[in-house]
Length: 267
Ligand SMILES: [Zn+2]
Image (tube, rainbow, N blue to C red; front, side, top):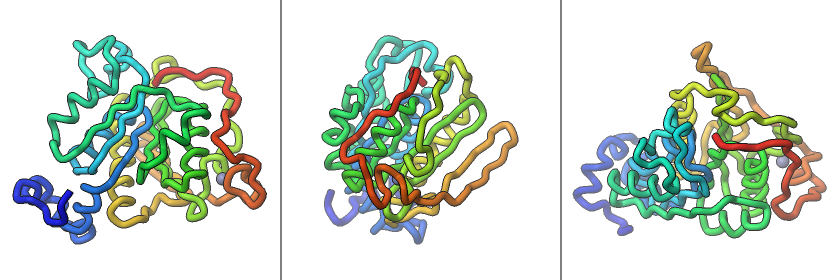
């Protein structure tokens, strides 16, 4: 990416360039950024769509799933003809048509405690839109240990939440949720309101753009809670836990560590 925006880019990103808080400097930062999206499901699809349109430089698409008919109610990058195909391949094809400025890197893998450090290495920002607690803790561990900012989001039925994690500027996921719940029903079993994935995914994309452009967001150390049934949002300040085993005063976790979750499944 050159320092000057080319004529086509100036036209494409005109609405960003018009924003004093983004402008040409911010857009150039975006065009140089490397963002890894973990999970290209209900949250990953809208997040990846908006980040691609916004003009991030490189977007990593990490998922090892194939498209299932039960995904199509909310995973808007996929269509009926894609059933059975790897999500990252379909996502890359769809996104490539939106913006040629973005280098799309499909990574058809599952993030585990053993590969997490390697998978997050080299990215400026990680966004976790995974569908299960096991992955969320491992992504958190890898990002905190690698000092990479992390945007973490989740949805359940009519509710969603988003926070931005970057110790010591914020608590980590383990500060907020020391242990995962014992049972975790999959989206298709517990149910999820389709547009809620778009709401939460879009908030995650907005946080990613702000974090990339300005290095800060209002959700650092805050947990945003969205209730789509009540059509309400609220945010609560969250504090670092000095006894956190990962980012506390005497940490005991020095590598991505699995948590015991009884059941995890597909979003
Ligand atoms: Zn912590």
